Length: 212
Image (tube, rainbow, N blue to C red; front, side, top):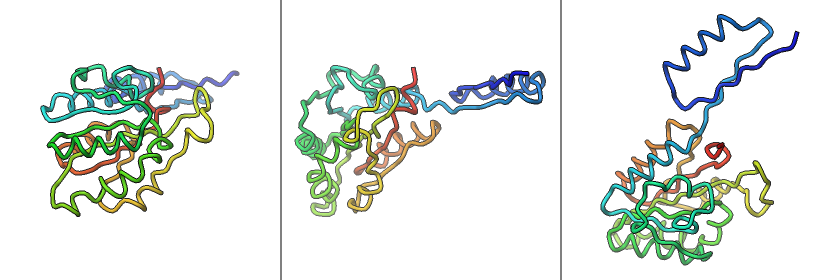
């Protein structure tokens, strides 16, 4: 007999998953298997960006946010264009602008689709943004969205898919780093980062949420 694998892609559907599992468990053959895959979905990321966009003091800055061109762009559908600043490829300047905007009282969400791009902003991040409150006694609120480059469906090459989370954690003294490994953590972490204030790096994995 041919073995059948039932793959279930979940979005926290709760009771519906239980009903489906019950049906499959009661009707599958002993040689068959059931595989459950937790879909790290754009739904929660879009919800998070919508939550931030609804706050009066927020502003969004980055490459390909007004003019969509990367996986993060797909989560900004509910963010008004007037709250966005599109910048060219100038990562360090973007980080400096993010700090400057935060100094005026804005809560800044700044986008770096790959860790490899954020490397170019290291001076502004490590020497200035990370230590600003310590040096001045004044708090600034910045959320840095950064992605680990995906190898699927096309490998972008060794310069575009590295994960530097550990390396940056070792360099940063006051910035909090969060890794979004589970779908149920996404909204909670973005909400906490905004409400808590300060500087936060939130690390995402596009291959986990950009499936469709």
